[in-house]
Length: 200
Length: 200
Image (cartoon, each protein chain N blue to C red):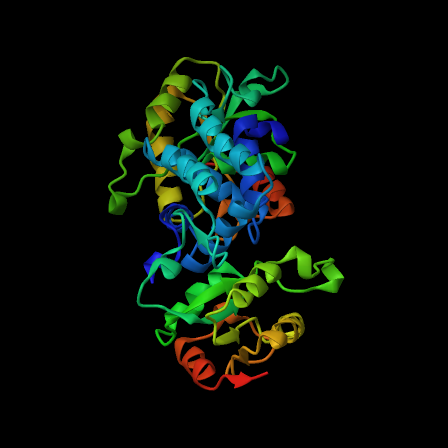
């Protein structure tokens, strides 16, 4: 049965099937699609993977993904550098930007505290945030981690760490349905969540 | 908004979003997953695409995908070369093999006749099948295209083409629900469909 497809095709199917949310049947469809692409397009797909891996790294200021020296938000002169919005993942930056309400900068944690998954404070970018606040010029830190147990715990932990610096630490209002995911919040809910943020 | 992600990442997301059945959100998740892969694994994914494109081609006998000179089924001495099962797509070979009932060989058409999509007899591998039958040694051709309008039309067209050669042309029994897709048929249904095949 396994020998029906050539090894190189099976290998490509395996790689697609290893992606999150892609089952065996979908992986087959995707692999056949790649084989049927016009000349150059499959090559460009492979190059896109290599280029993204080669050029994308974390912004040294906010830890968001970038391919330049600093990310676009940190480089933007019009953004208010005294307000930092702390999010768990790079895609959450996109969600906040979608609200078109926020004019400050970001800090991407690349995860949340999770004792069950053995993720502690040193495994995510908390020290980088503390250093940023310690360096001064920051008046408010908005905790925008997801409103679930791990997100709340992370927000609470960081707010305690930042207390000595006398900086205002706020949390997004619970306009976002509790237990849900920041990524799927609609624009209106995000606007309300930004407006109704409260001090921790 | 578009500037939130670096260009190389946007490019990778675009490539994932161009795959069938992958929306924008899924494409983002997949791209982030690829960025978070351990060293070497993303490279191996890119290489898998290039290798599959570089090494996989059609078997000169049955037109199934292979990376060798001939495909594994055509090379197998135990397979009955006098019975040819005609399928529309390479993945349909896997479906028939799953039944563990079939011991003959295959012919992959790489499509079905579809006037609406401007796919005529010269756009799929019908001539190759006629040549195979004309070369002799074939006693039965089993038409295993999907039981829908286009699959039925293709089966009927080919059976008429093969009539002059005095070869027996059969069609998979309608154990497979009409209008459904061969790819999703369960094993038991496929066994019954093979057993109940009838002459066209």
